[in-house]
Image 1 (cartoon, rainbow, N blue to C red):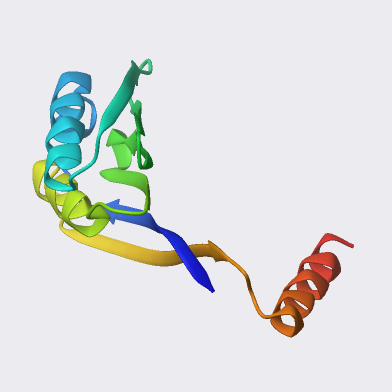
Image 2: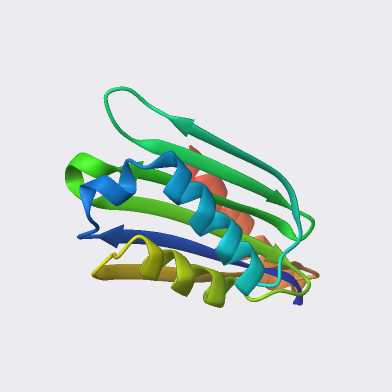
Length: 132
């Protein structure tokens, strides 16, 4: 497979409620994470929900970072997709530190194309069977 990117899917728990409900703090953490991850910021959108929770998305030249918080549960979910260059794991380390999550589960997905045809057929068959 020709790898074109790295996609991190993250669940994080035991983070302080006040940090997860602070849109400006999350904005700063994302900007710092982009810098550490050697990303190039194109646009940043941060939204505060009522009564609590924040969603932030950063569009990058390399793809994106998204974070969604549930302060009342001390939980956040993050999605970091970097195409080509960049250091998404370093960006995620910074987010974990900035938001003080004590537990993190990170899954790494290699993104790409040019799968061997036989493997591609099996993947398509599995998807088809799940959809039926």
